[in-house]
Length: 126
Image 1 (spheres, rainbow, N blue to C red):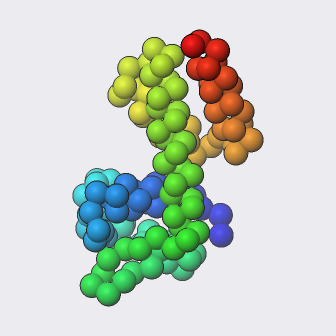
Image 2 (cartoon, rainbow, N blue to C red):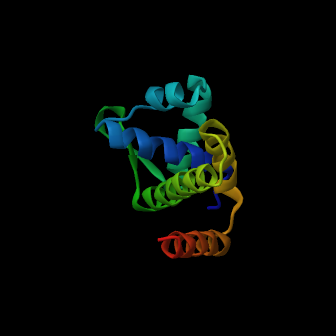
Image 3 (cartoon, rainbow, N blue to C red):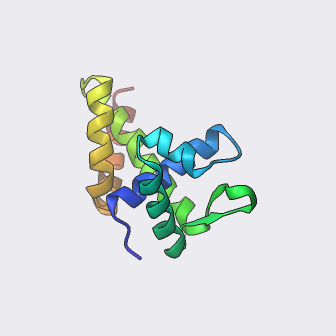
């Protein structure tokens, strides 16, 4: 199942919240993202049907192996692109917002090239 940007954002949010606390509920996701309970319920249902999320005993959200893989990939892109933009002189707020949009559209090939290029330049600057 091909995920839309919003699905990737939900997975990333579940990952971020699960790093902060051991039990993540749909209401926590909604509060973090600023979405209504019905919107979150629908999205979680789609993610469950796609095999990205499971709901455990007590209603906690658990990323499946595939869901965790997607979430980690998106979150890595977010962190890396934010840092890269800030190192280029973009203010943190703008860098964070732009990285959030970029992380969903950049191909794996281009992201790898970006990482290689900036890693090389970091090393050569030493």
